[in-house]
Structure formats: structure tokens, C-alpha cells
Image (cartoon, rainbow, N blue to C red; front, side):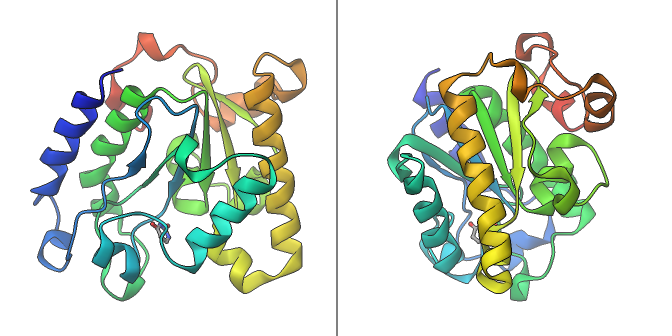
Length: 218
Ligand code: URA
């Protein structure tokens, strides 16, 4: 795709006033990375550091994310990183339903433009949004879900590993190893989940070309 399209979208987001977070943000944190990245990380929302810098995952959670990716041979400059919300919720509170609604069109367009082979969702908000489920991350993780012609691999949010210690970290390591395998061999049968689980998880293997961006999360 053309990086111009992504730049134009970022310019649009930079002046967005679609929700109340426009009043409290310092910067819109649109996303960073290559416009042709094979792997996209999707977090929850910018925190304090990200709001100040205008870049996602630049604090402690971001350093852990970089480390886990590097352990499976993926460097930050090979991926695209974005969040469900582009603006920081005050005090790092949870995103609200109406904020996600107002913002999700940007994320949908980012996914469509970047067209990554694998999307790794970090934590409950991103995982539930993409997989259209109320199932929590503890049950969702550990599987690569076919999603609009690509795979979604949900894992814990790195901040949860910072709080939760070795067990969470070990599970995240398994999920990063899964991402590595899916990137290396996207067609491998073992990544494809059972049809019933896929129905619960969302639209399955429907091709990206068959949809408009907003159908992702509609
Ligand atoms: N947590 C997130 O979900 N996103 C960031 O960009 C930083 C912390």
C-alpha cells in the first residue's frame, strides 16, 4: 500500500474531535511502523508517556513488548504498533464504549492499509474488539484465529505481565512463539481453530477484499 494513505489518515486523526478525549490529550497517538509490516500489535490506549511523546508503547510496557518480540527475532522497526484508542484516557482509566465506537474506524483503516499477515492483540480491549467476543483474554489466548484473511493472535497486555509476574510472562512467550510460527508458515493446518470456536470468535477466514473496513468491528 502507499504510505501516503496512512499519512493522510494520521493527519485526519491528528485533528479528531469525535470524543471527549480530544479535550484532555496532549498528542494523538496514531501509530508507528512500516506501512507494509507483516505483523501489527494493537494495544489499548496511550498512557502518560505515549500522550507526551505521541508514540505508542514508549514506557515500561513498551520495553517489555520490544523484548518479547526480540526473543522471537522480531525488531520494533519490522512491526506496526497502534492502539484501540488514539488518545489517552485521563488517569489511564479504561476506555469507554463510546470512545471505542468513535475511534475504531481509524484502527479498521490502519489494518486495511497495512494489511499485516498477523495481528497480535494485547489485552482484553483489543482482543475483544477484533474477535467480537466477551470472552476474556485468559481464555482467548494461546490460539491463532483466522480473521478477515489473516490471523489474530491474542495475548495479555504487557502491563499485565509487569504486574503479574512469571506466569503471565511465560504465557506471553508462548504467544510470541506462536506469532513467529504463523508468520513463518501461515498456511500450517495446526494454526486453524475448530469451526465452532471460529464461529464464536468472529468472521473467520472471510477475505479482506470482501469487506469494507468498518465491517471488521461492526
Ligand atoms: N499501553 C497501551 O495499551 N498502549 C500504549 O501505547 C502504551 C501502554
